[in-house]
Length: 156
Image 1 (cartoon, helix red, strand yellow):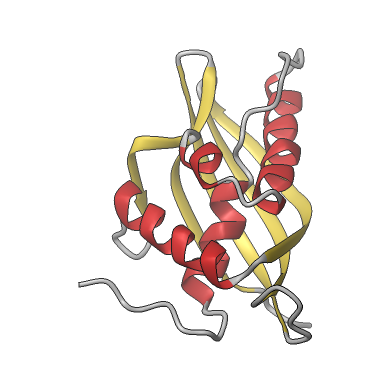
Image 2 (cartoon, rainbow, N blue to C red; image 1 turned 120 degrees about the vertical axis):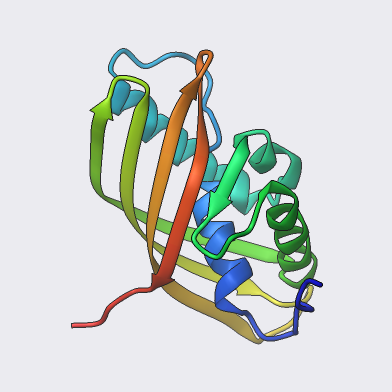
């Protein structure tokens, strides 16, 4: 049974929104793997702000698992709930590190700030900052997220 999404922003949907959204594939093929991954992150940030759930999920591997045991379908349900509750989503991202242990595998460390408005015209904002770790695999010609982990950013 899945937890219900409350009016208050929770770490699970907000964190995954930040993590999953950052993997949308951009148009064109930048030359280097690092440039391609950076383009994916930039395009993903834009897609999240557009609240494009289908676009986000296209970039998640069918074999996806997160550090909480969730799969792709569970992710879809949480993201849908978050997007329904937050009519406005804004992200600020900083890439802290990109590693390529293998030609077709990347690890990305990010800091992601989220800010969402809970209802149209509402004054109340929900905001958080997360440390996000993504693992991406090259599936065909597309980078897809196979694993994501996030936690509230460490202060200090």
